[in-house]
Image 1 (cartoon, rainbow, N blue to C red):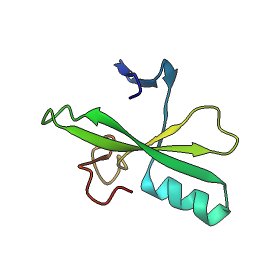
Image 2 (image 1 turned 90 degrees about the horizontal axis):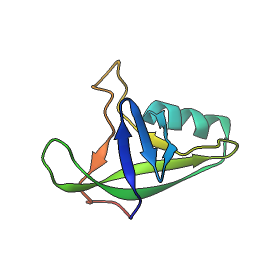
Image 3 (image 1 turned 45 degrees about the vertical axis):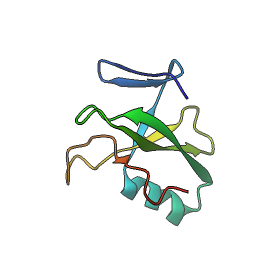
Image 4 (image 1 turned 120 degrees about the horizontal axis):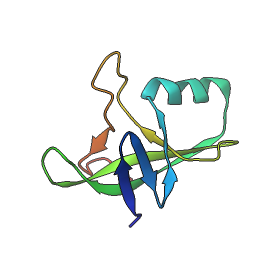
Length: 88
């Protein structure tokens, strides 16, 4: 498992910062043909204390990975967590 820290407003993965991306941002990458890949890691949900999964994206040309978050205009801007159902 990766070492994850939340330092103020910066989320770190193994000591390196994560960038944020919304589902619409990922759709934009797909529409523009920008190569990317995704993976899941397991983190503890701060709201209910349960272990859940979050989606991390690696985009070609980016130095840091991206974590999938809700759009702050439509939601709360939090990291999207999955309970494991449907994760391949």
